[in-house]
Length: 143
Image (cartoon, rainbow, N blue to C red; front, side):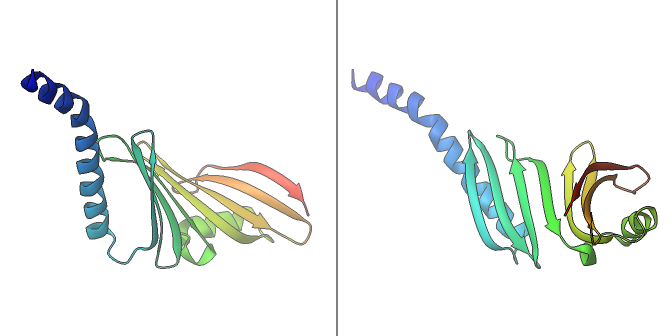
């Protein structure tokens, strides 16, 4: 009877031990990969881990799948951190508008930018592929 209770307990508790071990390993790996990360906050989203942090002044968000692999990352920054090639193409296509902010999204399949542009009267949100060869207006708003 004692053996049955022990086996039953282990069967029920094993998944939680595995999850704790994954979380610990993931946090350790993150700490090694990003030793200068600041304001680190971890969240468990139904078994998938997410981390928000700041790295060299850039706000970042990484989603991990249940196996601890990076599923998606987003970085939020200003014009000064935008890839110069992409920046030049956007400035040429939208002359007279200032880059107000950038959201860089990366998934396994692709990377893209959402760039907020402004002038004196309006905001224009532009979506760009990784090389700015495909630019499209995502949204326009008057101030």
